[in-house]
Each structure stands twice: as C-alpha cells, then as structure tokens.
Image (cartoon, rainbow, N blue to C red; front, side, top):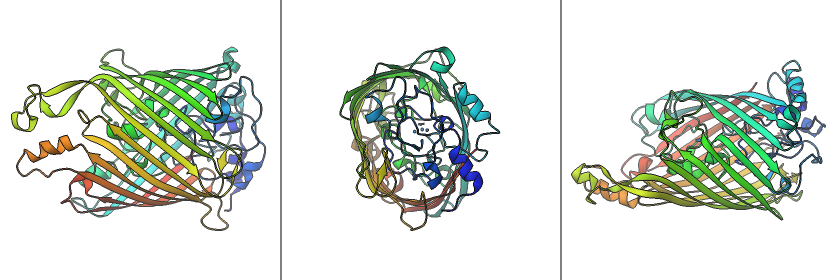
Length: 499
C-alpha cells in the first residue's frame, strides 16, 4: 500500500497518542485488527511507564460501549512485571473499532501539541467513526441511512502528574448521531445492522476511571466504566451488532450496559503467571444511566449490582500462533421481569398483569481467538488466518434473547502488495427464549419467535494510516426470529477518520 507523507508522519508520531479511549481489557487479543504499515517499524517515543493496557510501544467499546500499535520490541518500564505479558497484546490501531481508541490521525502531532501534552503525562485523541447501510432486500421499505460516533479521549499518567507510580486516569467523551437502518427501514431484526447506533443519540462521558497497578501481578480499576470494557471483551470490526463487543450486552442489555454507557464500577485483575489471569468486577445497575439527558453520573436510582468473574489465558510469540481463551460468568442482584408469567404465575399474555419479579439474573460466556497461519511479531498478528468463536447463555427466567453464538475468521494479506488489508467473515445465531415463544403462542395471530441468523463479509483497507474504509455485506435470515419474514440483505460501508 502506498502511504502519503502525511500518513507516514501520522504513524511516526508519539505512541503516547495512540491508545487513548481504549477500554482497559476489552481488547486483550485482536486477531482482526489491520497490520501496521511498513513505516511503523521506525522507533517512536514510548508511552507512559504505567500504561497497564498495552506493551511499552503500542499505540482503544456499549454498550459498549472496546487499539494500539507496537512498533519496537517491548521496553522495560517502571512498574512493569509479569502482568504485562499475558494481557497486553493489542496488535495494531483499530480505527474502525468503535469501542477502541484511534491511532495517530490526519493532523498527526497537532502542531506538536500531542508531543507537548504527552511529555507532561496527557495522551489525547479524537476520531469519527461512520457506518452506512442500504437494504437491498427485506424490510418494509428501502432506505439508506448513516450513523456515527465522535469520541475524544485523554489518558493521564499519574506518575508524571503526581508521582504515583502505576496510576492511570482515563477520560472519554462520546457523541452518537445519525439514523438507524433497522428502525427506519422496518427490518425487524433482533440485532442492529449498524452497531455504532444506540443507547441514545447524545453526548455522554463514557469513561472516567482510575487504575492502579499494585506490584507486578495486580491491577485495580474504579470509576465510571462498563463491564464490556473488562469482561467478555471482543472487537467491533464487524458492522452487525451480532459480532461486536461483549456478547452478554447484546442479549441482556437491560442490565449489562456496554460502551458507550458508563456506570459506577470496578474490577480487580490478577496475573497468575504463564499467560493466565483471573479477575472479578462489580458494576452498578441503574436504568437512569440510559436516559438521553444523562451526562456524567447519577447518585440515585440504582436497582442492584452486576458481578462478573473471568479466567483467561493468552499466548504470545513470533510464531504466528497468538491466541486468547476466556471463560466467565455473571450474577446481577437486580430484580428482573419474568418473560412469561405474571405476579400470580399465570401467563402475562392472557392476564395483562404486572410480570412476576425474579430475584437475581445470571449467565455464562466463553471467548476464543486463535491465529492459525501467517506471521506475528512482538505479540501481534501481521499476516495469515485467524479464527474466533463467542458463545453466551443467559438465564431463561428473565432473558427474552437467552443465548448467542458466533463463529468467524479474519485473513490478513489477502491481496499481494497491500499492507493492512483484512478480510472478515462471520456467522451467528441469536436465540429467542422458548418461554417467550410460549407467550407468543397464546396471542392469536402473533408470529412465534425462534432464532435469528446473521452473516457478514467485509474487506477492510487502510489507504492512509488515519483512514479505514470497510465495505461489507450482511445477510439476516428469519429477522426478529420470525420464520415467516423475508431475508434481509444490507450493503454497508464502515469508515473511520482519526483526527
């Protein structure tokens, strides 16, 4: 790929400006991120010594709401220890991943402002991510819509600011805007065909948290954050929500709030050696956080706490076999509405009474990413084939969509002579709870919901370091889980511009 001088300058700017709005753990491994351009092999300034989210040279979700580039061999840093090896293998900039922050941008060093701020402990970034879609088949009408997200982030090195070794503050402001094809065209899908839309087209503080490294093996994070940034993390390269972000939030989004919604919360992460880790978190469940007039925080309205736990193992190396394996579970202390029964334990569809309240909601998940062929360097995939699989099961008492499973591949270097191109292919199934379907059967003329099947193919190009273009095709079978509905086909374009 040919890079303009401006693009080369952008890649060579200080790495302290590269991974600014990145959720703390959401992108432990990302086999789908574009490989860095050749210019990225040039040495660059090192990021803050206490940046616990990435290797010393790397450049980061919703609902998310999740990425950096490592340009030299990892340097030894203050406070760095075993905790860095299994966790910090973010491969390369993810300018199209709306839950990760951006690489250096169009205006490179902002007339030396980024370098000046970075020297004083402030890493800053700004980006616009856009998703367009047109339904060539399915839905109630033909529509072309565009929606997007502006995000501005700052990461503060507390060692430089206040002499606190291993301390980091992250602040991210997001603005979502635009129109949603799923609604405007009447697609009737369970999962959005433009993942960046949702959770209110509004400005909000998505991240405002503090993370402290304790010794070589422990990290503690507290503040305004979201569970999908730390647990069940997965990239958002695909445009269909089925394949984007922490999967539990796609199923039980009424209490597991992904990027860009934030809530009070935190987690403790412990490295257990040999690439393994365990972690435990707790997050406020507060429906007021979803309101459009929400900006920073609410001090009332909480209905309970979401408590996730996760164990994982990661594999690094230069052999083309990088990978990640995670299993986790969660429990919510907030009450939930039964999907079938009323307060008298009769079908809601017949009585119309208030639903039965269930105490406690729960689920389990597993995530796998594995590079199978090609090359890797310093813990990032450069070329070749990688596979991923995600599966989540939520409780059947309160979850209308109770399980989701996805499988897919990423292939880098498909066309000779192009740097940073990625082919992504994925298929997935979102299931409607059989108990909710039983309620459908009790209402004459109501379609009985079953499962929605989705597939997406995209090809991503990075013509310059600050621009990603990603045309895609989506196919949705049984939209909404209704077998009598016609298939939906969407032509999409995902693009991201880093400023």
